[in-house]
Length: 101
Image 1: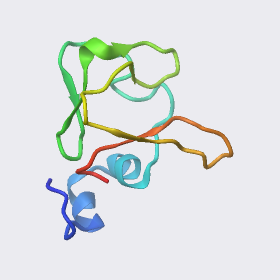
Image 2 (image 1 turned 180 degrees about the vertical axis):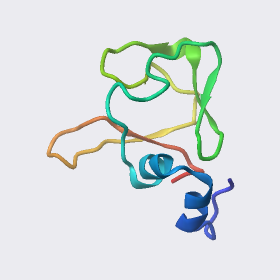
Image 3 (image 1 turned 90 degrees about the horizontal axis):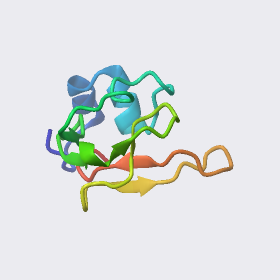
């Protein structure tokens, strides 16, 4: 989906599952250890589910033991980090792509 000023939240709801919408559009997170990519180690590229932009290469993935997929590097220019300080401390950063945010 192309993101432009006319893209409405209802359009995102039409193409994303409720869980994907909550995570991508509302800056939510999945419970630790529940995501299908946590223990996934096949070769390839991880893309954004909303806009299909390439975000990470599998060669940068590692097991951090935290329950979420972890990467030591992103594809240059692919992401913008936004630290979550809603609980008075820096928590897991939100990863934003230009197309979905």
